[in-house]
Amino acid sequence: MRQAAAGFIPPLPITNLVARFDATQGVAATAGVITQWNDISGNGNNATEATKGPLVRADYLGNPIVRFNGNHQLTFAGAQVFDARNTAVFAVGRMYGGTLFGIVGYAGGAGNLRNPGNPNNKWFAVTQNMLLQPIVNPMLLGSATASGNTTGVTNYRTAPTGSPVNSGSGTGGATLGMFNAGAFGVLDLAEVAVYTTPPSLAAVQAYFNTKYRLRSTPYAKAVTFEGDSITAGFGLAESMLSFPDQIMRASVADWQMINLGSSGATVTTLTSRATTTDSMITAGARNVLAVLIGRNDAAVGGVTAAQVYTSIQTYVQARVTAGWEVWVGTCIGTGSAVQAVLDPLNQLLRGTPLGGTGPGIIADAGATKVIDYGAQTHFITSADAANTTYYQADSTHPTVTGAALLATYAASVLAAA
Image 1 (cartoon, one colour):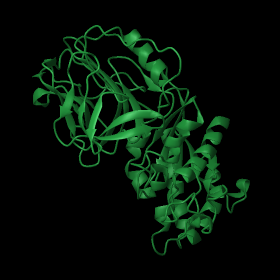
Image 2 (cartoon, helix red, strand yellow):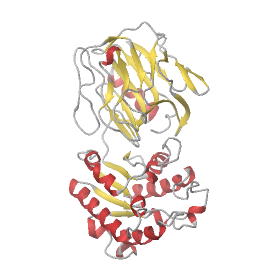
Image 3 (tube, rainbow, N blue to C red):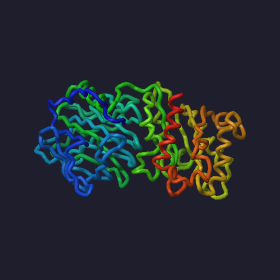
Image 4 (cartoon, rainbow, N blue to C red):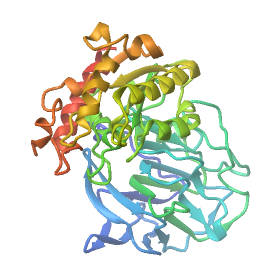
């Protein structure tokens, strides 16, 4: 999600608005822990600490947010009775790291507005029966309930699918935050609006689209980044400043972007979650899977570059068969002995057309592009990995500055494609 747009922003409809939260105002915290998030609708439905309060993060890529870690909630303090059968909830933010999230929960657990899967590092807009998509790195989740009926979970790819977002019951108090997320769930919220009856969807859409630079039409081009901790952003402020996330700053506005990278991943890890990865394919769009993997495979004792290459080749072939256009990244330099495997692996990935050895991943596995991260200045050799401007102390993972350089390069590849 990019910074809020400058200039005129259409007003948010206030008819039937019962609670509104904005991370730029009304946040009361002690030692960084929120005790109350004030309702700015004027209805007094402040959200107060229910369990361990969420932490405040002052800014994420230009957007102030309120962060909920794990199963942390705030309880609505006002007298408002929330009915799961007749409440519309709109939220803009980001969630990652768990498997099942709720944003607004009703008494007794019925009627949680939730996501059925693992969104992994994607900004989202949760809306009532409409499409709101961030220009970059989007995730559109859920619809709240319409009056008198239930709806399924909606995303930007398909018609409403999945489990209903409410059970048709559950009235009384409500909570705001994380539900069933486990110890690693994180929810960042920039703004939330709660209505007792759905307002003019066009008016709400105009407000959110303008303020957060969202869009209401599908993308023609979509890229999903998949890989290990280099892609995930290990060690970078809750993994939120990885190079795919930093591409948000590069204004590659015509690409939908998703980051599935996870720390410690190997080719086997990627293969085990291939079904989830393949579900990211957007009908009618150009779907690119940008894979950066091999570092952890190479770290296994006695493994050769050829063996790692063969594993990557098999994975890429399967993703091409599944319908992806696959781009494969070369591994960046590292200060460890693994470099002795990564150098020939990168040469195998590049192949003859790109100056490497052998046919290369393009010819062998049907990939269409090699993103040569490992040939970029500051990321080539073990000596480069000793530069603390671009590498963390482990001489393996990029710093925020290093990730920004990788993001600039990756963005240039996207812009030219």
